[in-house]
Image (cartoon, rainbow, N blue to C red; front, top):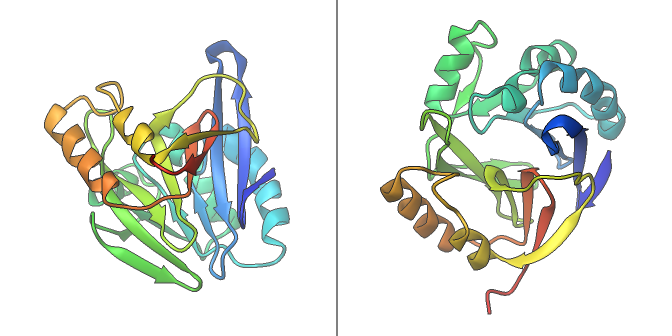
Length: 215
């Protein structure tokens, strides 16, 4: 567990055979939110760390960017330990969670919507994730300028607690067909992100990114 930025905590596991680090995040705001659960195996390790980080506070939300094992595979276990927490996801992801019998209680958000929760303001962004182009969501916490990029900004290697520096525009320009195969959807996403402001990118895999000016 690493206090990676402001009141944001990172939980990481490295898988050597694929040279990839998996991150989950807890924003310890007035109403704490967990971003991704990891797989069921990762969630088993996450739960005691999450309880320690929360220090008795109640977990309010669990954000799921899209339906994939490292994003929500451990959701049933997390909800067993934190039964009052509400998943937040796209409409398609909510249908998948329900269809697989994981959760029928998700809060559905649409791109462009905002959620004010205590001392945090979340903005939801359309995410045509690469898995079959299922429509997911990306998350920006506006007051701190934290962008949760899921698989959009991606890096291999051992990256627990690692932070590199870049610019917001450079990272937006670096989005390729590997992340969003459909060129029109990729262009729309880049235009949407360019109109927003971020200070820090919390990646799903690889180093986090402290953002400098776009100059």
